[in-house]
Picture 1 (cartoon, one colour):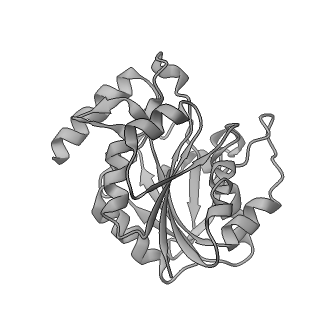
Picture 2 (cartoon, one colour):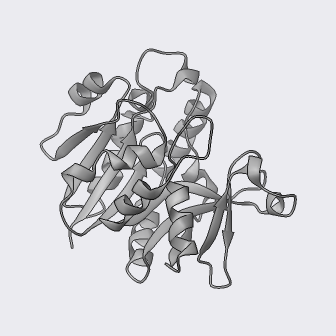
Picture 3 (spheres, helix red, strand yellow):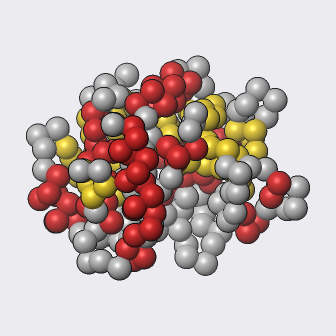
Length: 241
């Protein structure tokens, strides 16, 4: 079965206070997207597709490579909507490694554990345990560590808010079934956005096993949304070199 990396890189990154697409900001000598591309290429993927939106032409020009394909998310309507933009590019069955273009510190060893976990499950996701998960969505797991449900912090009850395990935003998902699930989701939020965790919740509720793979270092799951977080992740990346 072919393995296809899909990198979600369509966000504008308003809080970066820059016209430059967020994923083109640099840390430790590479763009954020460059770090994620390096991970995708080290994961024995047959294809690499980058989902672009804001600054699409600039990203294409800067990151052009013979092995790269691009899909356009013209409206940023959530991570699930972003993944749907590659549906027409993937024929038949495939294993999709979903990566986030603004989360550059995930280690190759963690990605390999994620891919291995997906071999015996419908899909797999990376989770992280944080001392202060704050407003991040929580991940509720079953007795054998599998996904029971992802819940947004705003929708969580008091007991669920005591959970410190959060969704790190990396997945291995099967095509074409993930596209079928995403197509069934009706957005339940004011932004009319479709989120990948909604599809995973549906799969788990219907009896599919979604494995949860925990990062060894929670910093692997750190994303970049502003200049302060960019400086923070640069230090992490330099330590990994």
